[in-house]
Image (tube, rainbow, N blue to C red; front, top):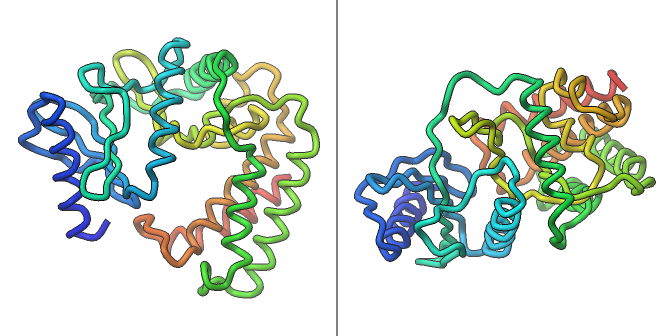
Length: 277
């Protein structure tokens, strides 16, 4: 967010926490992109603050988190001291979550696989309406095909991304017998190593598809510890993930830090993943 929007987002987060009886004298910015994640002190709560246009996504995330917590999933929980809902203040959607202190090094591949298997088991126990993986691909494809959304994407790279997205989406969507609810983006940055064990966060990306789609976001070694996973399908999903990642980076209004680097790097990762297939 731009500095003025960030200032307003911080104030919105502090206001919502204070209205819940939580003392929020200080706000530490944990993450800043199209939405902001704040650690509020001294109450030690995590506030997710997004533009109000993202209210449906924020409300969906809260609903999924509430149901998964009841299903004993390894996920970050809403803060129990606050109302389990999204509140709008000054054109921002705010939700309050438990803050977890980091514990130790990154999660090992075997532990990642174990956490993901338990997460998938819990996801099979809940019932929420979620888009299919191919619906998400369709949105990325629309950004690639619309020159107004991606004006700086070259004709050659536009054709390459279009072919990759449409081709892999058709392959992965053809057989839906094994589809289930997924996290959607369980990359290592969305898995916290805490004293409670590994916990997945950022649940708004929940969607339907094969478990291999989730596995393709994690360490390559993790797949060896996930019983029944299809290695060939993981490779296809990994290429598809990088193609979607690259498509988002080429949007005119993308706000990912170091976007120019990731535009080039994303295309290179897509080609490398296709070569491995």
